[in-house]
Amino acid sequence: MKRHLTHTPFTHCAAAIAFAVGLSAIAVPSMAAKKPTSSHTKAAAPVPASGPLPANAVARVNNVLITQDQVDAALKAVNAPDTPQTRAAIKNQLIARELFRQAAEKQHYDTRPQVIEAAEQAKARAMTQAWLRDQVKPAPVTDADVKARYDAIVATLGEKEYKPSLIAVKDEDTAKNVLMQLKKGTDFAQLARQFSQGPNAAQGGAMNWVSFRTPVQEGATQGWPQPVAEAMVKLPQGGVTTAPVQVGDAFWIVKMDQSGATQIPDFETTKAALRQQLEQIALQKATAQVVVDLMKSATIQQ
Image 1 (cartoon, rainbow, N blue to C red):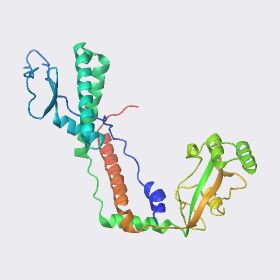
Image 2 (cartoon, rainbow, N blue to C red; image 1 turned 30 degrees about the vertical axis):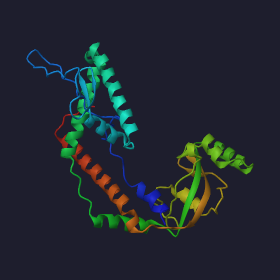
Image 3 (tube, rainbow, N blue to C red; image 1 turned 45 degrees about the vertical axis):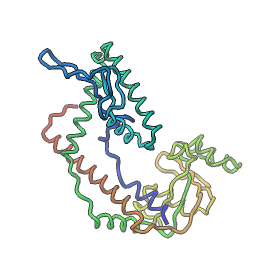
Image 4 (spheres, rainbow, N blue to C red; image 1 turned 90 degrees about the vertical axis):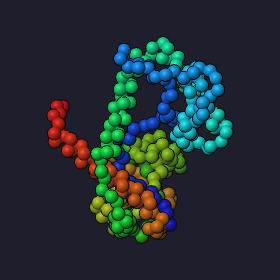
């Protein structure tokens, strides 16, 4: 009793936020002594280039220390098993990276325009992300909100659920050609990969489980085009539409891979995922409101 609320409507209700910033696999601070930025800036004291390693240091690369904190941070970032072998590999990677950095700095790569531009872009991303964290205040999601969302989704489900595959093409002649090849025994998934311009074509057109009430009503088909939904519910398991179903300028061919009685997971099973999705929606709305507020006081020419 899990597949329905896991696949379609629960996972499709949240939109992605366009403010995520990618992090490198190993994002740890450099311990290099900082160079003076002007004649009035005092340089940091250099790290001794020899002698015993200080506490918490795991290596010294010329005059730069690699610390245990850096290894710990890198291990956490890559989410790898905490083993001596993994730590040794990470330490070696950090040493290699520091050698690369020092070699690049020695040849003044830090003054190259593309490096300066990349540094400014990274600074801008970090600054923007920090500002957004402080300014975007999404509305809290309550237990009642989560339960209401669960009830609303369950109310849209029909007695049966369907797992179809589909082929969508842009002209009727191609659709008829596909149907002719299907009648000759050509594999549906093969034809989907070859001809389909619809979703999941690379996966042979296989779609997720879906359920909706019958008779099919406009706007209550979990996002499926109504003509396709109406054709789908009439198909037996293993059946294929005998004629292309026109949706706008496209022509769809549907195969019913599986069907059966709708299985609904209980609320406890789905509430964590539902809460996360509602929180994402709240974040999206709050972010959009910040954009609207900024635009009111901005001068934008396009």
